[in-house]
Length: 132
Image 1: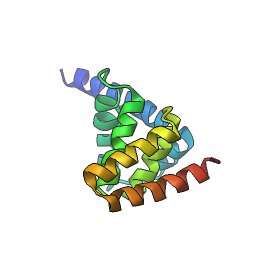
Image 2: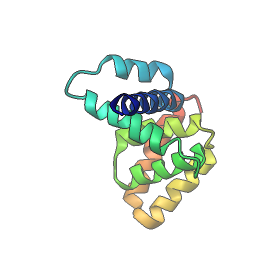
Image 3: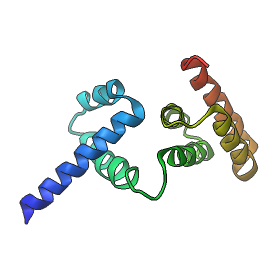
Image 4: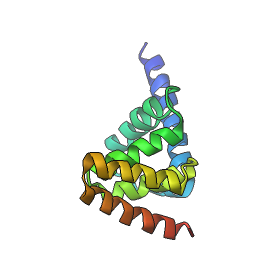
């Protein structure tokens, strides 16, 4: 029984790591994985299995929708560095600049103008980084 659980965990971890690579790019993900130490490794394993496999790979929402939700939540929580990462992922997932603009306007109404102002600032930087 223990080996089956280990196999299941390893499969979930591998699938999550693949999703992470698809969302954020193989180069960035592989660099993060190579820099793991014993302190941060448990968090990375949690992210790969639970976040990037068990949640991101669920069939209930498409990746662009999940990305738009993440952008809104991270903006509302004033998590600029993570917002930047997830804006890049949103574009990779096919979310358009116009859709991101609409998400950020929604944030302004429901989470406050200062949160949206910061979101627009970070988004502009991400679009500039991506050449548009």
